[in-house]
Amino acid sequence: MTEERDKLNRRSFVGSAFGAAAGVGMSTLLANQAGAQPPAGGQPSGPPGEELRPSMRRPTQLYRVEADVRDCEVEGEIPSDLNGAFYRVGPDPQYPLRPRNIPFDGEGHVSMFRIKDGRVDYRSRFVRNERYMAQDKAGKILFPMYRNPYMDDPSVEGLSRSTANTHIINHRNLLLALKEDSPPSAMDLLTLETVVPVYTFDEQLPSKTFTAHPKIDSETGNMVAFGYEARGHGSDVVSVFEFTPQGKLVWNAEVTVPYVGMLHDFAVTQRHIVFYVIPMAIDEQQMKDGGPHWSWDPSKPTYFGFFRRGGDGKDVRWIEGPTRSATHVMGAFNDGDKLYVDVEMSMSNPFPFMPMRDGSTWDPVAGSSHITRLSVDLSQRRPSSYGIETMYPDHVGALPRQDDRYNTVPYRYGFLPCPDPNASDRRQAGACYARFDNQNRTSTLFNAGVDTSLAECCFAPRSADAPEGAGYLMGVATRNNEGGRADLVILDAEHLADGPVATVRLPIRAPGQIHGWWVPEGQLPAA
Ligand code: V55
Ligand code: FE
Image 1 (tube, helix red, strand yellow):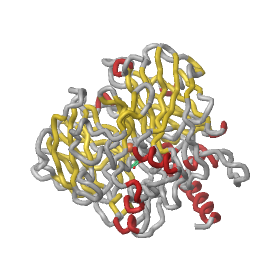
Image 2 (cartoon, protein in one colour):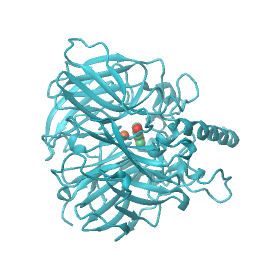
Image 3 (cartoon, rainbow, N blue to C red):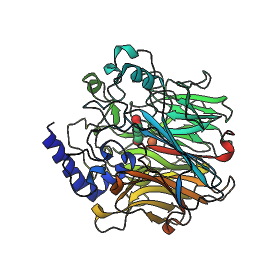
Image 4 (cartoon, rainbow, N blue to C red):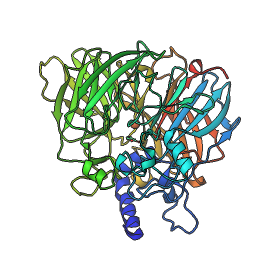
């Protein structure tokens, strides 16, 4: 594609997508990286801030800055009951992405805001796993295409392909950096040194892969997780498992999917496991032609699959449904005979950079996401359909979160980065965090303004036994009018409209983020 067309497409994307706000939804995901980099000298400039808005452009510059900032500047006051560490991770390409590659590739760069007794230290480090080390040694990219092993340099055979760029959680005394095509990479919780490049839970991991979205059981603290393409590239086996907080495998079951699609997230309730198969389907031909792992196949239906926790998976039931996309789960629970799963849902491919299998142009309206409640009536012996209800039609966005203490049980509050739903002109809508009250179907809002992009947010309870939603909501704000400098904003989650109780001011940009995770003081090792 010529540069001129590239530019044209990008402009029409910005023009239409902001109307539908699809681009804004994805912008929260990709804010701060790739296209979100400050313009190089001499680059044509569009409307103020446009260069810093996320786009479908390939990165023209790398970032890669690993940083330490001791005792950060803070505006306002760090609450005395907020002690722990906020971790985040995202792709930060070690070498420029190859032409057809997509922004979900790029090596995982982890950053940490260590918060204690009113003081904040910031640190960021690449995940030095097998991929990073091999490329560092070679001085070039050896894994040139997103989840496409056919394109790998022959020298990397047998090495883990993990970028470790998607999510970050603590388990035992380790920080696990996750990519859904591989086992985790384990880091030191305080130094961010990579200590186990390929972490297989002391060889207990019953899958070749590990999801980026494990859930913590609300009663036991166990980690419930899964791997898809579990037996290797293209496998239709999904392995589900449960580890105690001490790292002992206590449950494993397997199911096979109706077709191999991107199983990015899943739902866990006290009684059930749910997988939602979407038409982001594996594309062998595209991979053999040098492209990424997935394309959007609009001819495929969805399947809502569920089975009993603790069983052997043989009871799995796949309910066929209309073509839709859902990537992230906000919360899920059983209520009597009902099984509820709240997701971000769009009518079609939510990712502008993922190819459409039928050759059609990506549709920003159909690609925009709303918080949607999926439900199944378990009193029917063979449910033949699942319910789809848009919960918050005014709010457009991806990356919903909840108070993670409620991962598997009925919950009331959810959080979402979204453009201001009240703005009359969506192109001028400020970047917001919304808090939803699912009981009353009401919402409150923090508006960070039009010159800021907000990454995914994360909730930290005031204390281990604080009521649901009582605590702090935090997330990284990228100041697009200050060269992309980053702040961590910390809000009282029950009073979002009051604005930040504290803003941690970094003097630099922060690496891009997909997901973030709060670890309370009690789960961190002593310094
Ligand atoms: C997502 C992100 C990924 C990926 C698959 O929705 C799905 C997010 C950053 O990588 O590989
Ligand atoms: Fe995710």
